[in-house]
Length: 157
Image 1 (cartoon, rainbow, N blue to C red):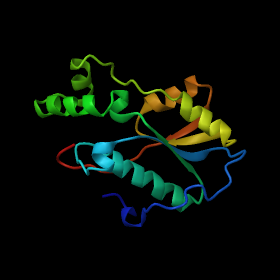
Image 2: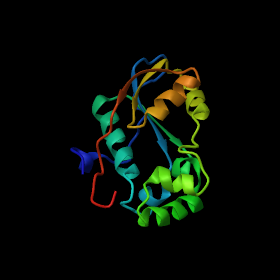
Image 3: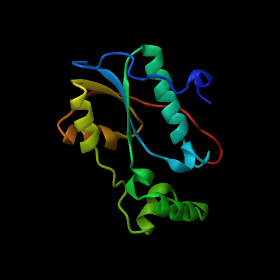
Image 4: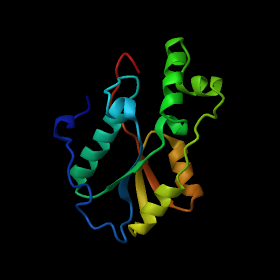
């Protein structure tokens, strides 16, 4: 568990007015039913979301964008099939490839549109995934920094 996890609770994340904000801490988070609802330890998604919420709370400003892109965009049923392949020794990317999917099918046009609608000028993206940084930039959004998230490491994931 990461430092401060016990204080990360569902709270008003939009406590600062984002209109015109620059270098705003932002988490573009992808839905993870297995972790966030069922408590699976196979991934650290729930812990990453909690870390981001706590990070934003400590800074008193920031936004979480929650996208419906389960399993790197392959959907819940295919994610469960990928879990079975992971049990056989494949990592997430290899399992997705064996199911006929690309490495990552997520897109970030909606996230960029949401950030623009909030009037946010630029972000410090809270992510471990450089594809998210590239995805937002490809949508013409200014990502000025990336803050890695270290959370949820366990023997299962």
